[in-house]
Length: 183
Image (cartoon, rainbow, N blue to C red; front, side):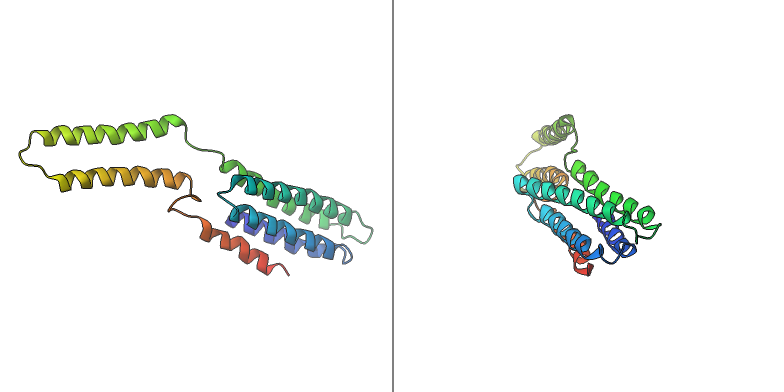
């Protein structure tokens, strides 16, 4: 998120290198793009809504790119504008692809199977060891089962950080702050 916010901020600042006549339209489209990126994250875990916002942001990327190409080709454009603006735009757009792809990458199913197997094996070993003991210490058994179950839950929750207790919503504020800084 920090990389995306920084890339967007850098690209936005480099719009200053373009001719004055091209800046307002590009700045407005850029603001719409950042709004679409923010909405992409806010709409999660609604996958369909997030995909719609992602598609909207990709359309805005193409629009920004077309406007930027047209602006750097204007006769009054500075020669270094293309060399500075276009890579910055490319980086801002590439991070979108990286973040979208990262949401699709999860550990293979064998990792989850091993996690469940480990929990069951530890419960089996704890039960086997306590079977020879006299008396019933249900508090210890309940605590052990609860700790193992909670540990498995937290591990799975970290893998899907927008659905459970472990949340990344606060990190979205970085992009919101970037958007607020776009004047």
